[in-house]
Amino acid sequence: MNKIKVLLASPRGFCAGVKRAVDMVDLALQNSKSPIYVRHEIVHNKRVVNDLKSKGAIFVRELEEVPEGAKVIFSAHGVSKKVKQDAKTYKQLSIDATCPLVSKVHQQIKLYEKKGYKILLIGHKGHPEVDGIEGQVKQKIIIIEDEKQALEIKLKNEKKIAYVTQTTLSLNDTSEIIKILKKKFPNIVGPNLNDICYATQNRQVAVAKLADLCDLVFVVGGENSSNTKRLAEIVKKKNISVHRISGKEDINKSWLNGIKTLGLTSGASSPEILIKEILDFLSNIYNEVEIEDLKGIKENITFKPLTKFS
Image (cartoon, rainbow, N blue to C red; front, side, top):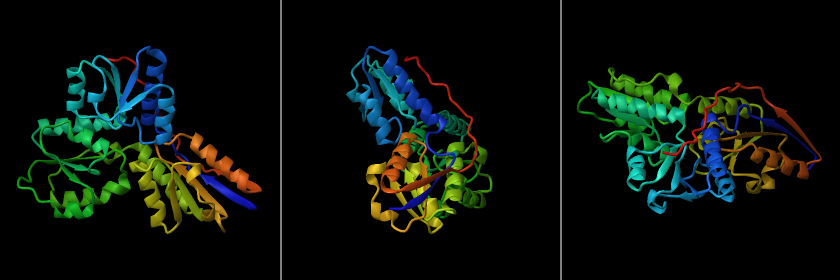
């Protein structure tokens, strides 16, 4: 193949919450002589998980698999109050790597319940973050996944209703649902839209800009990554060809036939090494690869890792 131009979305890849969680496992492995267990995938990316496994981290589905008195880290998606209590029951030492922006939603939902509100959660059933948010309160939360469900919802007491949102959604995902809920329940309360995860929104703005300039877009990320799926959907809505891939090994060379400009972005759980490997792969099949890093929103937010088990 002759020549291809590659445009890189900016920002892309690791957000501050993911970096903090991965750093916490790394630091724990470096500073502990005893095994480090991690409940669920620390973030939704196989490359990150496998890298941490190679360094000695032991991933488990549930705390029953962790020995009494051992050290365990909870994933960035957040966990229910019951999971934290179970760790104490099993006499396990734990560190909570929940993203601070997810922890903020946990605090919001607890406050709404304390004030007597019926709570609606805009998010995807079964996602670990949604499970963790649900597990902060005693009441049965109503999950709303799309506009259709928002239109169909019926509540007996419409005076005190509140909503919160899954952080890996964005303004685009939630604004129409919130409009429907506000029209249906004029007294509904909820967080400021500025509280929605900055990283999710920034990456979606960046991929929309990227798609307008490309013939084809690769979105790099785990198949179970919610934010990666959203990135691909944005490109698809613009009628631009898009493939979600976990890395260079997923690329079918036939996808590149006739492509002059390829766009690359990655979900918030995807390490930059995956982008580099794809660029190396392209360099091996093209005589010339022109790479341009698009200008985008600068992210200066950092979250300090916790290092003390308790």
